[in-house]
Amino acid sequence: MSEEQTCQRCGETVELETEDFELFERMHPDCFHFAFEHDLNKPGISADENCGDDACPVGV
Image (cartoon, rainbow, N blue to C red; front, side):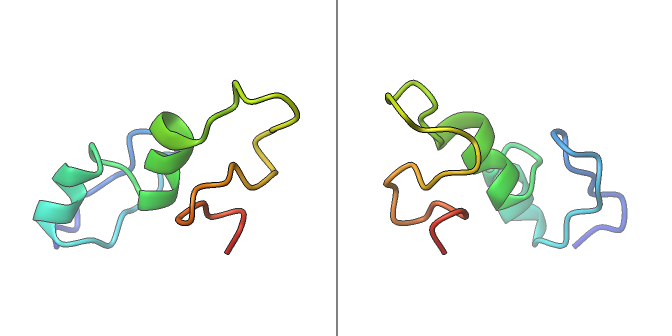
């Protein structure tokens, strides 16, 4: 892990192995989920509601 890994979404330090940091597009896994996977287009789903994905941080 590099000390210089900064999340592209929230600006906070990311503590992941370099490969994982790149896999998640230089973001925290949760930030990646909300940027690319959290389906806000579903009726009734907002950023603070579980989107139905088993990996959704809101549902954990």
